[in-house]
Length: 412
Image (cartoon, rainbow, N blue to C red):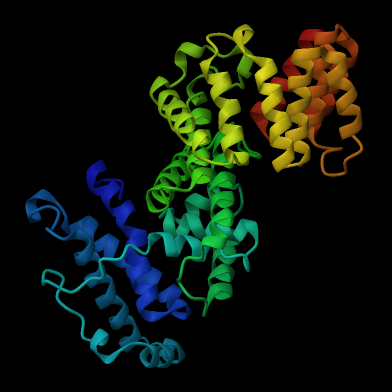
């Protein structure tokens, strides 16, 4: 769809999960694969036909896509003898009337219900592993190709294709109904997608902006479907406030620039304002949750005109609150930094010594990087340089490794 104008491309990306949701609800989860193939063919047909010389976008684009996808699905079921078994199952599950596809330009009846949320919930079903949920969500709801997802997660395309295929097999037979009890899983998947985009776990690039952008788009969609959910609003605010810093997060050569050293005039003020407004509107409405607290921390950083103006006591108080919700070692590591900024590096180093006993974090490069930074603040250049080098040896991210080696060399 690269040759399409952005308006049509955005519309197709928005409608794709809705159309897939209609087909999966109509034909059942056992036909997920066939439904997705049919939707992809309908999107391709739209990309070829929705051009100005052909009359542009039809009056009812969603109905057009549903009709074309349904017709393609029926064609597949009827014609592919190699898929005879699926044909029999699908034929039994599909009303006879649905096998009589309408012409794409006819006033075909299309359900008003938007199944995007239900589809998102299906892709984030707890029977799937976290990596499978992410992959299937990006494929079925985000509309990314298998190659794009594989590239973002630095795995071979064949590996990602197998992961997605297994995920589809696993959810066969599951209903498309959205369960509010799974809202937490959906938010967590979107959070993981955003984080991978903001700080890639490996590779030559520090970030994978497309993943962050897609996570924000999907979270906006989720909030639109559950507008009263404060944690979803908190998650969106967190993403906006964090992504606002991305332009200043790398230097001209793609090198990592720490928060304290960033040129804050390069931060995206529009995203910052939207994130602050959203979290300020959400927090007073009910009990705070971990995403809201993280967004509040990001807002404190975002409102500081320069690094020295950061309200670290407020940041520390928020991390204390966050630990009550989410006592994971990464949160504790971030809190140790806040402690060091409020009470001095020695206090932070004491906390790091305790965290080093946590097997989940003991060999993580971030623990060593923070330790190096606090040792540097304390004036222990030799110790800091050693810790920087150790951290560099353990990261899979090339920009992070270069940054850490550079810090070590500067202290040598």
